[in-house]
Image (cartoon, rainbow, N blue to C red; front, side, top):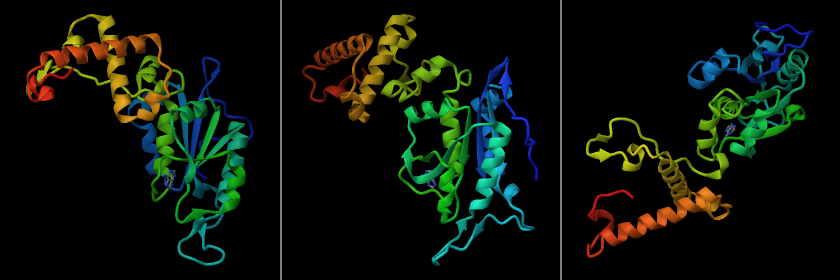
Length: 282
Ligand code: ADE
C-alpha cells in the first residue's frame, strides 16, 4: 500500500490551530484525478494550506495479486460491476485516519450540483468523493454514501471528471481559497449571472470597452455591472430573474437600464433598424 497516512491517530490538517477542509477522492485513476490540485487556484490553495486534497487509489484497498476492483454482474448482462470491498475498506481507513466523513458518490442518478450544494459541501470537515466506473457499482456501497451527486444530465464514462468538478466548485467556497469578493461576483452566487469583464487594450479590432469602465466613476461602474448581471440573467435565466427579490441597488440598476434603453431608442428614432444603426452597445 502506498498511503501517505497511517491509521491510529487522526490526521487533522491544521493551519494556525484551525481545522482546514479536506477533500478525499477515491478512484482507480489517481494520476488522472491528481491534476485537479496541480494547477491554478486549487494548487495555490493547497500550497498555502487553505485546503487539503487527498487522492486515494481504490486498488490500494484490494488484497489480491492483480488488485482487482471489479467483477461480473450477478444475474448476467454486459459490463463489469465495481466490487464493494475496496470501497468499504477505503471508507474505514479514511474514518480512522481523518475522522468523521461526509461521503458523496458521483452518479448520473444523483442530485445535480449547483452553487448552493457546493456551499453546503464546503462546510464539511472531511468530504470523501467516491468515483464510480464501468457499468456500475455494487449497490451495497451506497450504505456508505450520504449523497449521490450528478454534474449534469449526461453520462460520463466514469466519475473522475465529476469528482474533479465537485472538488473545484466546493473548494472555491472554502475561506481563503478564492478572494471572497471574487466568489460573490461569480455567476450563480446570489442567483445572478456574472457581468462582462474587460481588460486592456481599450479598443481591439474596432471593439471598444464600454466607456463607463474607463470613467473612473466607481459608483457608475458598480451600477453598470449590476445592470449587466440583471440583463444577462433576464435573457438567459428568466426563471432566476422572475423569482428574484431585488435589492435597492438592483432596482436602481433596472431603472438606469430602462432610462438608457429609452435614450438609445430616442437616438435611433427615424432609423429603419434602430439596433444596428449606431453600432452602439448600450
Ligand atoms: N458518472 C457518470 N456520469 C456522471 C454525471 N453526469 N455526474 C456524476 N457522475 C457521473
